[in-house]
Amino acid sequence: MGVLNVTPDSFSDGGLFDAHDRAIAHARQMIADGADIIDIGGESTRPGAPPISTEEELRRVLPVLDALRDCGKPLSVDTRHAAVMREVLSAGADMINDISGFRDADGLAAVSNSQCALCIMHMQGDPQSMQLSPHYVDVLAEVRDYLLDRVNAALAVGISRQRICVDPGYGFGKTVEHNLSLLRQQSALQQAVALPLLVGLSRKSTIGLVTGKPIQQRLAGSIAAAVVAAERGARIIRVHDVPETVDALKVWQAARLGALIDNG
Image: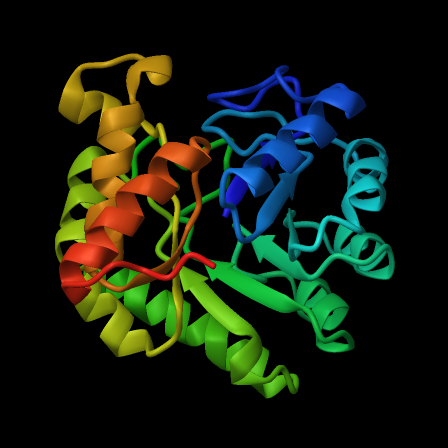
């Protein structure tokens, strides 16, 4: 899953792709480099990011979604707002990636009447407060139970299990110790939830704290995290650096299978 942030203030690439032509060119390059899904985000959810209006989020996202509808790959929209969900689904979005885990009943209603895929993510708090003092007694158990609760809520409104994937929410209301503990135990999380796992560790502060590197020097650490996540059950890897991660995962998979992978 290639990240396409059409925002001026995302933590890693804010302002790089908020111009329409640059956003489209970057998406098409990620597809050429091997991305299987493009995830379009119109609202920054970095720690402390201010909320924006529905109108502004749609102004950023809809033209990009419209321009990429013929790209041949599924298009995901990263949003936590039901009004945005409805509009982008009408415009042809294939997936809704909600960092709030569809806690808003309106969000579940918005996706229940479509056939889109949905990603249910764990987050403690909200982007404005989530990193102030995250606390868990047992991070694995609490993330697992939250995800199971939100999956059951989706099933209860008629959403098919086959449409759902889950995300442990690395970096969303978690310290570096919480993130590393979750990553160490990720296989157990995937087995407990028994749904495809989407993981996003690319360039995040945990990578920086482990390596001591600033955001733009976290490529090697992000690739290592992607391979570890895949080894421990992740089936969708959300990344900024598509070609390098694709190559790393090809080598990991070839080594795991003991054979060359057919990339045709």
